[in-house]
Image (cartoon, rainbow, N blue to C red):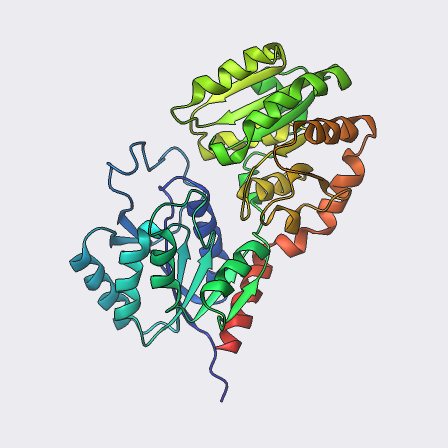
Length: 379
């Protein structure tokens, strides 16, 4: 008799925790719950405040909430982790799915593995290695992932990194699903621009998300003079949470003499506010220096917005050059400006948006559910 997958426990952040991994976990849990008995176990304490000084939760919008989530895990308390693992074990799940994105969680997850060794453990690798590496990060990653039974990776770069750690890993590569759930009100471009005070006749490009060095925002700012000379009615929206180096970006904007063409919205953007920025723009720009994959691309695709991105990490796996956007070399402002200018001067919006719609199933949560089923059969 076929051994069917029936009962799943998911472990990871979920509403009210902020950020892309939380959104991802909530949407994945909802999709799998359509077919399986899924229990959601999240954190009572995710990061200690001395490591993550900003607010970790956002209660303003519960659209990503998962009913009956149990907030059990204190990531820095081994006794709590053991107790949680024992509780999970008593439910006799067929599979435990754990979200992996940073080695901080290595000690916590290693304890869970030890006490759940009779259960199949699948890791969803948002990044195999962190974007910003630190001493011991590779060893901590190996300590945990070597004990996983199966893995889902969402970029070819992560696939290569995983197989470098665990050559015999049972794994599936599948693109990061899209975030259509941010379409909360269905507002169109004109309405969105009215909300944020942008002229409907302008061409609008968007940089969105946490501003970190590796995301290459400075190359977009340096590209702006050329973009302005090629596209007169242009507006660049920079929307996201800056770190302590914000002043460097503001000084660069002044140095490039493009202040009137750039609008900066600083701070964490609540879930319910995301829609207006993506609805308002024509094109999303990711000038990243390095990357594995990016949830920003999938938010863009959820709004049927084309993307200009760099040829780094997993971005070429999901941005198809000349079809759903353009790819340029990292750290190259001239290529970046040329791609943005080309998009507008060649009127690529309709063609690229249609191509994004054609690719939609590949990025669906339904497809992710199929990948989980395929992994279970391999196990």
